[in-house]
Image (tube, rainbow, N blue to C red; front, side):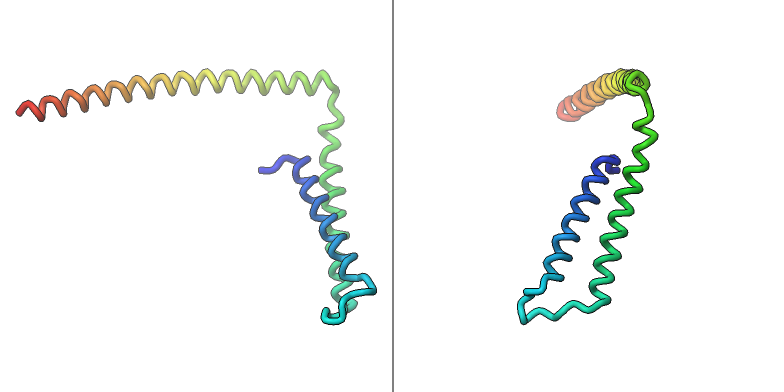
Length: 120
């Protein structure tokens, strides 16, 4: 999942692209071979631009709860996340250690089996 700021950036990039394309299509000096835009085409482009702008506004508004936290609250939250991450890292390391132990046990058993089979 994309974080909120990345999504805002993607929407802004999309809005800029849409505006660029719209302005290019609406210019008076379009080449003769292109079909002229209908009112419906222009309305569709305008509607798309408005919808994209509204989406950006909505995403920015959703940032407000994050911005209302004090620096100390944010630092405490980061510390809690770091502690959880550290604990999960320890658990993962123990599980990897256990898995490596059992891998060695299985490899030793397979080696003994192959040696005993060759000896027959």
